[in-house]
Amino acid sequence: GFSITIVCYDETLERYPWLAPPADLKTGDYGKGGWEDESSALPEAMKSESTLSKNMEAMFQEELPAFYELLDKEIFQSARVNRRVTWLRMSAIEDKNITYSTEDGLVALIGDSAHAMTPSMGEGCNTALESAVKLVDTVTSIMEQKGESACSAETISEGFIKYGLDRPKDC
Image 1 (cartoon, rainbow, N blue to C red):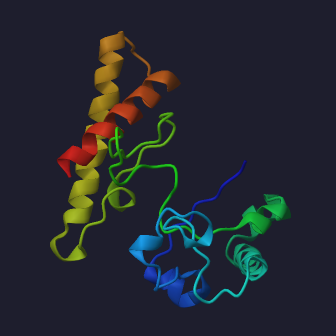
Image 2 (image 1 turned 60 degrees about the horizontal axis):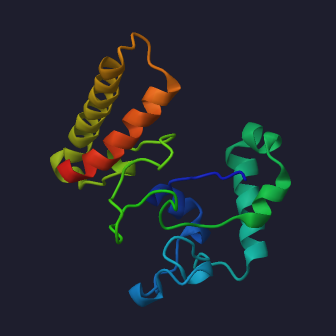
């Protein structure tokens, strides 16, 4: 399937308040699936899934017209607003580690996408730069172990996975 992930900052929510997740979602409701789950919730202002689909389509049409033209319009029928991405383990579960990468090694996160920091001390930028260096060091180390002079896709994936598992311990 096809999935689009959008990170909504306060300015986005000011312009599109219908994207805000429900404020009354209780911790005890997490993990039950459907709209009651922490990773998929019908926004507070939405009355139905069809309203969400129409609003998402209008937003894409307005904000990303060239991209909107390339999309199959059926994609909006499965629109969801997630509190967090579902393909990363950002909290510990039995026999699994927290990771900043996908299990297949196709995506690795750095910066606020992985670890949000308060802006007052400038820690976010510094931590993002530190994460970028650690990611490059990890990939470079694997290249050296394999004797590669050019990085292969397999090596990048291995590096993403190793970085993803190691980096949360440092933050």
